[in-house]
Amino acid sequence: MNMQVLTIQAADGYQLSALYGTATICTKGTAVLSSATGVKKEFYINFAQFLMDQGYDVVLFDYRGIGGSAPGDLRSSLIFMHDWGIKDMNDVMNYLVRERHCTNVTWIGHSIGAQLTGFIEHHQYIRKVVAINAAVGYWRYFPFPMNVGIWVMWYLVSPLMLKWYGYGKMRQIGWGEDLPRNAIIEWREWCTNPHYYRKCVNDTLSMDRFYHFTRPVTALYTSDDYIANDKTVSLMMQFFPNAQVKIRKIWTSRYTRDKVGHTGMFRKKFKDTLWPLIVESME
Image (cartoon, rainbow, N blue to C red; front, side, top):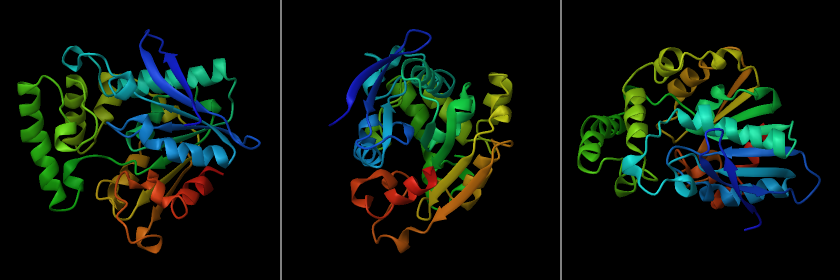
């Protein structure tokens, strides 16, 4: 691994685990890889190396509660999902601007990693957001029978998890890393509401940053991802009313016979087929 191990101290003192890689050729700027929910930064290392070979400095980081940024005891953690946007994404941007003097940042957000970019305060330093499979997560917007499985998760499985364990034991059901109690509760609230996190943005947090976010956003989504579909991606982009938005559906069958789905875009086997599409959207 040709990346420097970092600890980024958040404004509230929380320690965020991060990796920093330098471009192998003349740099085109800095790329931030912002993870999907419950996905550790290491999942994106191969793609990060690919970007470094394309001329980008790259930053990977774990949100609080995840991977290297997880506390010793998730049961006692008070972390909310919105903390990843309001706190962690801002702390990473502040680090890049203050410590690395970056003013040309491309933010590659995978799912929640793009959804919460509206919380970033110093977005003037972001040249572009590339949103990968970022979508409104309301369960009724998913096709049958997947929507039934998601309903079971939010109305049956997650309440039992919290009752029995005190946190989201997500690894056990194949949903990524374990999550703090408040993060699960908030995620459930969003995914059982047709307006997703709008109430959180407008009422709970009383913030209007999404309306002031004016950086260009290119949204890519794969045709075989039931979460990011024609309806949910379009609805997600409505959260950025004053940004210049482009939406592109990637018909995966044109590039591969393998399933790509919600997370597969970053797998190494797609280096020669799908990864160039992301780089093309960055430029």
